[in-house]
Image (spheres, rainbow, N blue to C red):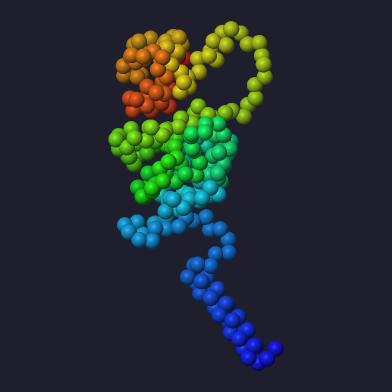
Length: 246
């Protein structure tokens, strides 16, 4: 190798190493995933983390570290039970595993978390095509993150996750008593109709107390009634179950 070639090779090596050093110093050289979303580069929110860059590989803790929202709030919103998962380590792409049967037209994954975080923090977010958990909408309302008008708008894409949560306990065919079979039939879901509630033994007085009125259409599902009236299905369901049990 000629002296000139050696000089060129040495110069290229120096430039390469120098470039790496400068990039590392400025924070552009990343050797491993930092689990930090990109930041807004201009405008009112410049310097803040952008929820649109949240990735499916992020855990609830990664999201909590980047945004002003707790792991407990995220777990509550998405129905992640601490007895089944470690909430802090729960990864967003696991939502598709926890809720595999939502239907072809229902999306509940990383995009949903992005939208929920944006609503919770007040940060701008453009892609609003994913669904939101009903409990998450309740949290946004309870904590004053959204007003009643926005809540009513979001109810159109609300997903009641309690309808899709499954127990790890396996059940085997048994010869239960007829009384137990009747009790098992008194399970309230989103598809439970107003007539079903009457069949469960609830009266006009109880329904008026809990629902605020007697629905005119007895075949209407409880979930549809709650959505129409802007009521929290999960809260109404819990109250009705208490009434049935007593």
